Image (tube, one colour):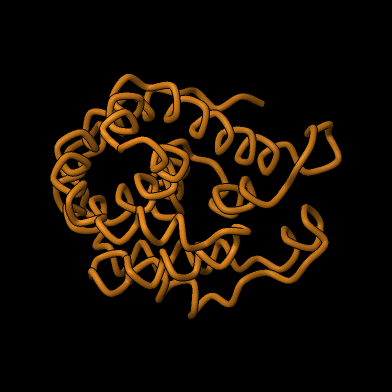
Length: 196
């Protein structure tokens, strides 16, 4: 799961949305130095990551990647889960029926929450992302060009980006599987309880 899916799950858990992104930034133990709700949100992000990686659908999806590609399979699948969620946004129900909030409204609300400068300064001692740019990033997950750009941006991080780019180049081949498996995986993740 990448930003959009983490935000969607965190929203359904009733936790601060900023923690859905800070979960990728804040390292180490959470020992009461942050507000309890923010710590719970960061902890929830970590639980989602662990549960996603261990889920049989994720294990099977990574296994479908060839030798040498499995190291990057999780990254590719995370981004594709966001793409699938964005493409199928109106079909993603909650416990009380179809998702009523349009993606555009959710992206704006989530981006504003993620751009909370106080939370970023307190938890990560750095500036918060710009709300407009983060909203555009979330909305870009609907488009193939946005997915290509996401892989370019992520590929700038590893020491050998050419390997990630080689695996990510064929992302369209994996999309049907992710769209098929995504609802069941998200349903399993919705069952996770936040811990305080």
